[in-house]
Amino acid sequence: MTFTWDVPEEDRAAIAHWFATWSDQVAAVDFAPAMDLFADNIASFGTHMDVVEGLEALATNQWRNVWPTIEDFRWRLETLKVGVSPDRRFAIGIIAFSSTGIAADGSRFDRPGRGTVAFARSAIDAPWKGVHTHVSLNPGTPQKSHGARPAKS
Image (cartoon, rainbow, N blue to C red; front, side, top):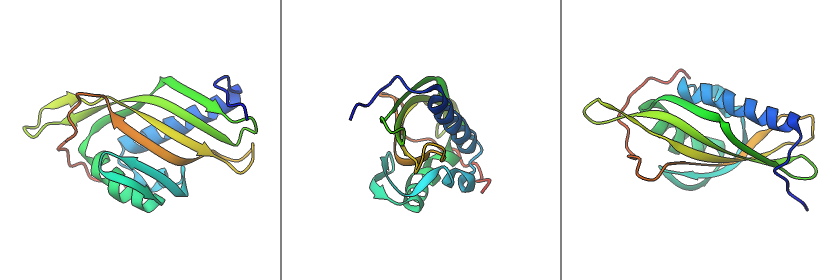
C-alpha cells in the first residue's frame, strides 16, 4: 500500500468541508448534527478521557466537557494536511485550531491546539466519516477553561 499526501482535489475539498462543518458545530455547541460526521464505532482519546470506543462515549466524555467552556472555536483550514489511501476509502486530516479559553476570573486567553482525524467511507462517492480523533492543546496552553455556554442541541 502506498499512502500519499498528494491527494485528489475532490478528496481534499471534501475533508476541508467536513472540518469547516464540524468547526461551526463546535463553535455553536451543537452536538446533535456533529454526531452525523462520525462513525458510531469511533475510537478516540483526549484531554478528558482515556481511549474510548463509541460516539456517545466521545460526546459525553470529551465534547460535553470542552465545547461549552470555550469560545471562538475554529479549525484553521489553511493548515490542513490530508493524506489518502490508494483506494481513496481511508484518509487522515491533520489540522490546527484556535479558540478562546475563559480563566476562573472571567478573563479570556488564547487556546490554540491541533487535531488529527482518521476518516473512512464505504465507497468513493460516500461521505467521509470520522473513525478516530485526537485533539490536543499546544504545549503551555492552560487545560482548564471555565465557560458555561448552553448547548444548542
